Image (cartoon, rainbow, N blue to C red; front, side, top):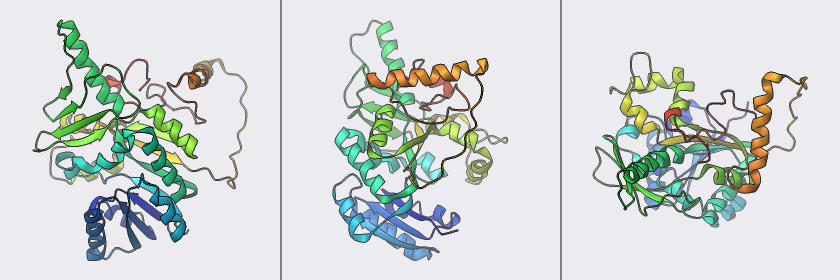
Length: 337
């Protein structure tokens, strides 16, 4: 089996290169808009003698120059990612990992350019995955504050969310969720400074990805992703020497609260030469009526801009929903975010 080629967007000083050793990749490409981040990533790779070749490029992943470099260098990768290794420091002090990527949602143009660059980097059949803010969770928390202020008869709309673990402050008080440019600042309880982020509107992300040439695979809240992969990640968190999980491997309150602010995402670049799977048609089963209704609702909502239609397999658990928007207790009833 040939070794994978991996491109890491916003490589952030190379702090995430260790995991690729375990994946036994053959070549690593680190891209970041920051010259110091690129330099640090190169030093990180050289100092630890990674068992794979690597190159590092100073570029903004949402800039026009990326495709020029790709063409000049003939870069084609199996995986493009923007995702940090799940570790204790991520929960405690490394809030900046999503800074650059989420800010691509400042505008539709910038988000579209990023996804276009991702498609150029990927081989047919390759995957784009990573972490994004779980906007459904964040916006639902915010809307609860807005509702509480209305119930109290207050005329002003609050612009922040506060918990014992973090503070989220929006630049502008709004009662509607704009698809692009909704900026906020996040400060964890043990940090002194705020980090800038943008909410990522899931249906818009899916629409732009499809228009750029990527097929939707999954968007899932990080807490649910952890639960689905607990066997793999519980030992990792348990070895950190901090109280992140209980003896059974379940997330403790603080960890669950913080991880719930994020979602995983997976898209794939179609391979026209791939052999499609053989599907045996089933006779109509009344027990599957809810699935047919779900598909019809997806098609009907494609025209109103709320939720674009995508050709994907139905989720095995209908309660999770197609967009994976936040933990169940924080999920909006209409599933539109």
